[in-house]
Length: 470
Length: 129
Image (cartoon, rainbow over all chains, first blue to last red; front, side, top):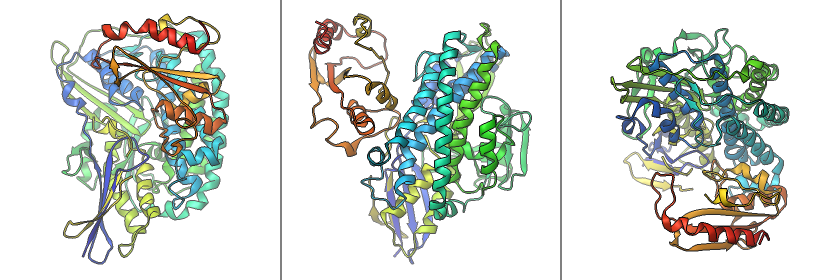
């Protein structure tokens, strides 16, 4: 009799989700599904609101990456006003987005995933958590806290608040950067860069212990999508869209980000509130691609900062198919983010006080695309002649990764579950496959929610045979 | 409102937050004590409730339940500070019964009336009276 395994809730992710693993009569994995069981609905209740409210309204989608939504939303509003924002405003937005990426990556790596790296996938679950880490390797958590604090403090110094700052607005930013705040940020960066480098080295030393997981997480073949700079460099705020295959060959390059609709469509599946975007020319579900730090580093030819470039050279020698390397890419991006902020702040023009363009709406449709911590974030609005929103569509990084995450857990479950037999450590590996993507379900379903996952084991007849609740 | 009415003294740092963030532990570890002030749904309307963390509720107790994500409970912060830095600041939770939790930037009248009393309690704890 076939079976289904259910992991519900999935732990150490941001939001509520469930995994079901379906086994055939011989106990081999037939299929696995990642179900997002929460709904947000921001696209709908934005309708009828004035467009200028969108940045602050849409940033409420998420308490972890509100800045990313601010940026994408403000960019869409810039387009509705048909303005080019002052260059210094773009640079200031770039800094706050980099600080957001660094703090979010620190949360994912140090708080949520590092228990697996310290105690191993089969480690005692009573220890394999943040408390076990605090008791056994407190320095790792102290470093994580410090890196996150650095990112959050930069956000606060620029935007006046750590969560939901209202500083990024349609047309630019609200206030220029003061000399005092620039100096405060500059003073924090050398320490953050040193801590990021130290932990990157530590993780590289741990990777040989995870050869089996690296192999198991490399069964999925997909394309990779990200923004890219003019010279092929890593880009998080601007640039054009780029899609490559797993060998690094360009599938799409230099596509103006607002034209993403020409290559991406979305499918709704019955088992999840999370939409499934796909690359149109390949159809659904073959048009699967990944976004986020792994995709960005896979696509970029360089980072443009010395330490991150050095780390990237080593990273590029690895098989990009393995989602395990998302963690590696995350650490490189933390390093990059702080280095890049340091570079930008060296330019005296960053203190320029012309930071906002003012205009009424001059276009009925606007697109805003930026790189959020988890990948490419797209906001698309339409307005009426009074500037009121008539349509909003958001494509979130976790959504872009939905098809890949479903394939990932299927392949990971097939790799580890044999003859219907599984252990807690095996189920943790299935969860870890999802955690590698660092999904943010609050963002992607437009949820209040904590972090719990639920794994169900079901027979071929659909009967529930096992049920693991965290 | 409470922050604005607390005296600015070198011995008291006032930190206003929309939610408790894990990196606050770096600040907490530098202090002898911490008082968390918030409105909640359990304290009866028009009342203040002062709860002092002790060993049973604090670092030694259900440490395995700490959740360190993008937001934490007061207990998470105190327990994490102890586990990571080996310091155990005294901690209190001062709550008032919330009345209206919908959108707005004003406190209800019943909560506003308690601000003065809350400040008195904070000053008593910190020895400023």
